[in-house]
Length: 121
Length: 281
Image (cartoon, rainbow over the protein chains, first blue to last red):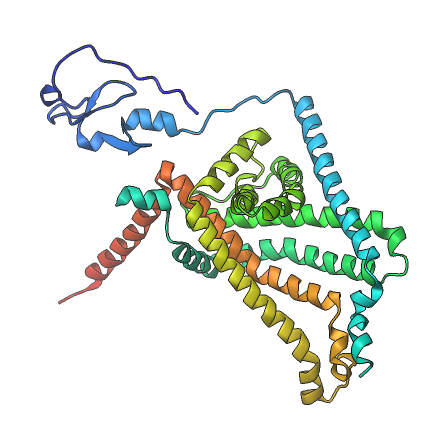
């Protein structure tokens, strides 16, 4: 998550006297809380309940650059451990599931348990 | 009003309708991705079940067969992740993922590591009743989020958890509809299996063990076959539902849904332009 840095403009000029940074002929309608500059209605957008300029929005929503999550050997080791762990948990589940199935009487599995009370058809 | 809609998300029935619409338009290749993964698992499960219930050497072959089932499960989850990501790219404007060998390897690791815990955590969550919806959504979301990205597992799990917390009402109502649908399909599959021997006898005159004695169909393998058919039929709808939930969840931040709407308007506008150009008074 990118850090939000809000710059506070010390100039006390009211918004109505400001002009858009990109379109000087237009009156500014908002001030970007990220860069502190003034913009017209076409240069701003809402993002997570804040009004931001296009440049700051692009920076905030850009996919994070390449992260180095450790050396290749370490990553391989971690991935191998995760794979082994996952497969082992799955094996445990199916192994004990199979044991439960083996413990159930075969009369129940093949349905002949229902014939006992009514007799053979 | 807009804020309220954003907080609650789309109605679950609308999302399910959209899910069915996407499945109808996504093409054969996407459907194949689902069934290449799921059919072998269901067949392996049926084999495992019948072996454990009637196999003469079941006890001896159990460790090897359990390992085979674990492999079939990872295989299925990987293909379901491919299916879900193809649906996601179909729903949005982003391009389909490129499956390089390293991405496939990461996908297998991510799915094996996280989805394996579902067998223990889902029954526990169901036992406690209340958190089941969130836990179920988490594992479904992980199929979409855990698509082999080179990120730490924790980051992907956080994203899946964040998506599962989004619009809980929509999630639970959607799960309710899917449960009803599953029940109806299961009853239908079971009826088909029960009626098929009788139909074969009536139409073709072939007498089978099952047409002689209906009670011989009351075995657990038949129930498992019906459950397998139900899983294969309902799975794509369920996956598409969670794909759309993830799509709209991401769109709250990216505005992707607006881009899709604009793309549709552009297509309509281009069509109108062409018609106007070709029209001569």
